[in-house]
Length: 251
Image (cartoon, rainbow, N blue to C red; front, side, top):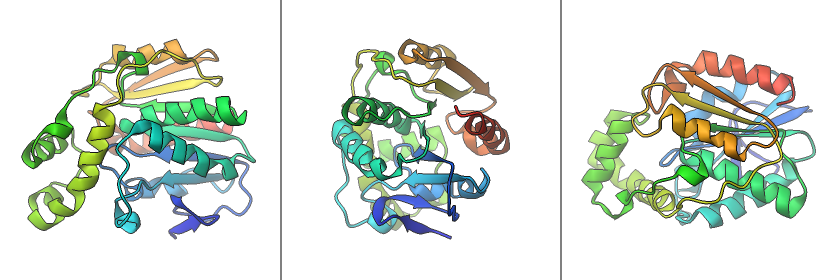
């Protein structure tokens, strides 16, 4: 089942959790939509509610303007998460979503005195090691080539000219957001940080991911799994099993 959660348009949930003991908020990658994480909805048991962010400009939010600035998106996601902080809240962000999850964690702590149970960051350089690219200034063909290179997008969608024209505005907005989110100070978060990456990621090295330790004042763990930038597709079962363990243990 796909429903809006407590009236907000910002999150989708793919299973019903009447009385959750904890929540996991999932923040997708550039060009990604909530449906990419559909299988996560029922992978964590009945006491864990999974909230998957749906950014403006895609799927049921197609007619809303895309957000192309990290600070704006982080502010809005943080505000939308506040009603869900009555139980321990863990953040998981993949690629662009990892930077977003980090910014949301900082805002929850600094502005609302809410410390996440844990921050999970996947396939994205630590904030102080970022090297912004200018793909958002390139033509459509270059954007599509980058999506193909990274994987994670159905090639059939990229081959269809009509679908390409529908999805590219959101992709360009996300790449603008990523490309203008420059290196930032390694401000620590008040929760454990877990980093995840694929061993053949073309954009992110193991050393890049290990640098997340610099923002982790309450514990750090790096897990390297077989695969590329979208290792989480091939390693779905392993990732779900290990995430379940962390959530059950409270981190």
